[in-house]
Length: 507
Image (cartoon, rainbow, N blue to C red; front, side, top):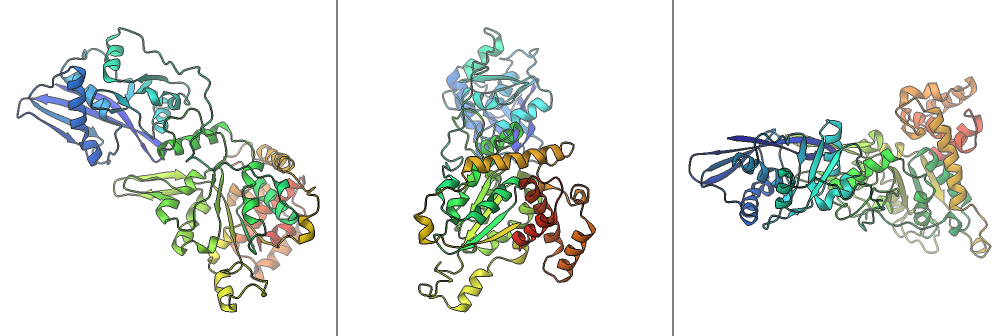
């Protein structure tokens, strides 16, 4: 007879239902798995056969066909071991036919002894099951804490195939032991760097701190240039500390990304802190954007709703830098394959930093021995399209010796966080009826509505465009930046000085 079990898989950070069908018919004793499968799924036949035998079930010497549909979608991973085993048992009539388990999505890897092992990328599938109206999910016990982050759906965790069959037989009720348990923060050392730098630790650099606060308020990209040791990297590490706390939607989205990336194993709770990703300049295009045979999220997606810090920006391969164009514009990255496209969020705040020459000492000619040509080429490695997508460009001057020995009474991260929170509150109220919430994400079609300009401001900007000081893209980005400057300064409308300051920061 033909039996049917429903499972699921993550496509990007979206879930999808996979139908697992089994048929036992007369013929040579064999087990065939079909449905555009990777080698890891094809190997499930041997794992399932052994797990069933060690659980006490003898598979009849007949022809067994397992089909995973849709057939045109490539399946990878170990999600389907448990549903395959149940489909076979259902066809063997070990499980009563009248028992309806079609209201559950069943996911899990099987060990040879019948243990149900945890899988990665489970959270998007559970969220999808809730949206599609499934009653619940049956998953590995070690994944229960992760699945319980999604409310409104029954979660049943099992540690072995025998335990699941006991639940199905009704000998005991499926109790979710993790429900109601207080979940803790994600502690994976691979999830994000721990950043504990305060703005108060940085002497001087008042203009740079002011620029960083404006960038954080509107979530604008920022590029810092200056001599080595002037504080660029240190202040970049302060930025997560002045950003507001994540909303529930942002936490859930980030947790899905880390789940799919395999960084959520054996952990409890959501991602609570804004990411700070700091890849080395040797990072590949695939590692930055994401990819692989079955694409996984890259650094720009792991930095979603947080900071992507690219230190020594010109040292990155040109192809890698240019690959940031579309994600910086759209806030998403789409990785296309022949049979499917994988879409990952990438709404990150780019923070880039570089020296002014290869040795890092320019313009101090007493120590810098780079030729004028080397300095020019180094400073122009970043293409105009990338620079056009960066809202704030600031030159960082070295801190003087006298400033280093003065008491540091500048702004602290706590004070900066309060300014950013005030600016974010203004934006949240202003865009309360919109799909976007931040100035940097304002669609071009909404700019005239939310940033009305006076005739003098329009004439001023027209003069800038005609003199080719700014491009059309830079014009709209400057307006969004001016809106953030006004919010930080607690101005209801964008004033002349806000616009002029924004153009100064942009260029």
